[in-house]
View 1 (tube, rainbow, N blue to C red):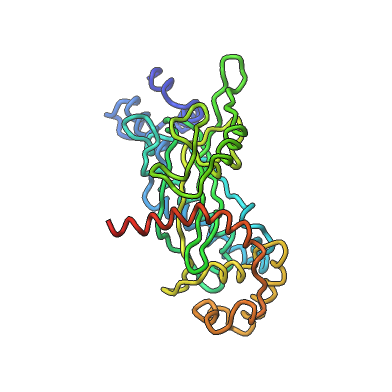
View 2 (cartoon, rainbow, N blue to C red):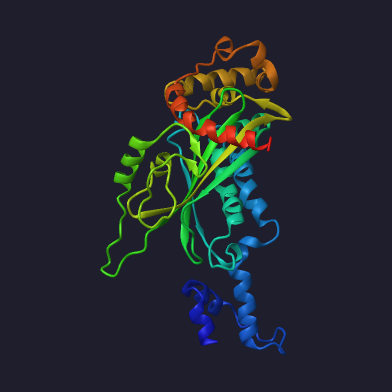
Length: 336
């Protein structure tokens, strides 16, 4: 029993010890076995049936509920910079997420990243979901694994927008990051991330190699070269484990809505956000917003309706020089 308690996290042991004695239940089962069963249930709570659905879908319906309580309180996307918006959530590599090697299972990278990606989508486009029932569909994903996440590790998943194409796809960039363990002297063994990023930017070429976006070297602690854009917000005391690039398209019903229309309607952007939000509200007052998203933009351009768009063209064009190659490789793979 003592050996089992030493193998479990102290917080979990404290919780289990605080649970009232359940000796009368199943008296023929040894207490140590009951302790193990309860520990398994508590330690694997994230894998309970339907819990994934609540964690993923919850943010979208939560803002709808808050908006009903306080109309106008959840329009947080108005005026924000989508390229500077990052949603970050903390995770723990528990036994239900790890494989027989004691590492986070490859499939769990996708499963767990669904939660912050949905929160990120809700942050930017939740208003369109609430009012016009617009949603986004996953069209493709690629994962670059650099260093394993060991069992018991606390890690962080960060989601941001990388860029978008003109007609259909929005690219999300998802990073799996953890803190570097401290060395014997209490100091963190820091790789020179800034120096590596500068070297990669200098050597970076436009294109995607067989191993991912071109890169020439890797920081200490990793075995795979890391593309320069992935190191953008990684601190010296952090480890980058994985980068995922996913392609999403916005939908209303089964109709695809171009990214420029969606971003303008949701009124992001510090320069034009407030102006575009007034246009969106006017269209809703006329009960024309849903029809515009369903295809009205084909007859009436953004400018004709009154939207101002284009403040992100420069940064989007720069990012898409890399990200478009990822999408192209995904589509070309269909011909193999």
